Amino acid sequence: MATVIEIGRDFSRTPGGRLISDGPFSGQLFRDRTLAPALKDAVARGEKVTVVLDGPRGYLSSFLEEAFGGLVRFRVFDQKQLSGALEIVARDPFYEPYKHLALRYISEAKPSTVAAG
Image (cartoon, rainbow, N blue to C red; front, top):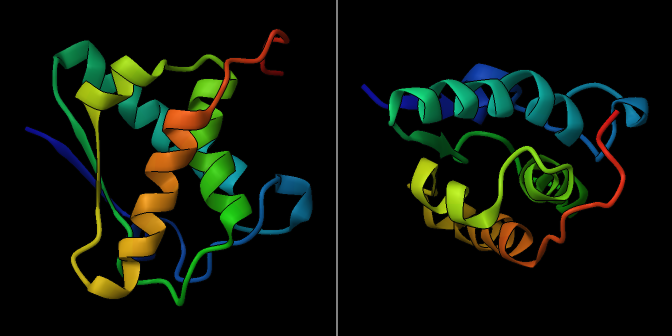
């Protein structure tokens, strides 16, 4: 059974900035506490995680880059793994640009030479 994470329901209706130090509901918090653990479990079971963007008022690009691009930058996953394990969904057309940004951040991310801390 696939895992579905609806950001507006399961994380926050008001996602914040990039880092935990930027305030509540950051991209770093979402990646580290919600998305990465769900993806690790799904990959171990040969399943997929679907992230539904609908719900919040909008997203800062820093949130999306940290949450999604950070998976690659911090070597949690590579692009190939994510292409098979992660689906990003925008049911409402309002969220389509955010979906495309998240996918772009994943595809353009370069793994860091420094391990995540």
